[in-house]
Length: 140
Image (cartoon, rainbow, N blue to C red; front, side, top):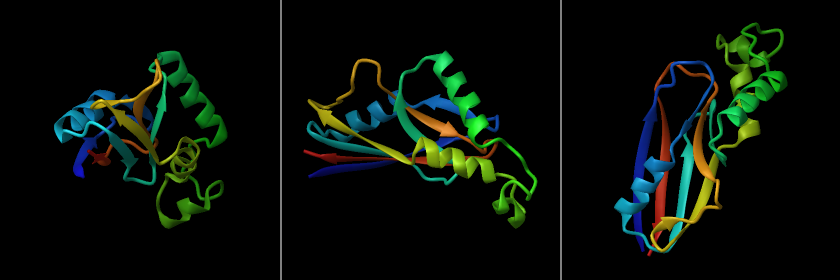
């Protein structure tokens, strides 16, 4: 069995943002030489997410607005007890929980086996510092 491990690094300049990482993941799959297998893409930070959806700016704007309604940014320790630790990112942990930690995509004939509009995204909910995403490719 073949395997490849890659780390993508991001520094999103805003508190919340979405980055299309599909091309980076496709490049890792091609580099791996795997023709049939699986690709795991995992946000390695508890205030970030990896998810699959459409690359449509209106959808991303909807996500940002919806997530802010679900878990509004509030640095005070009254709303989020987590902020009593000296952090101000209690909301980011909740946003990550909703959007998910990772995705697994099948590899067929050496390519990610997607539906017609599916793309892989990195979601950042506590930006402005460097974070990593793990890409792990396994197969034959």
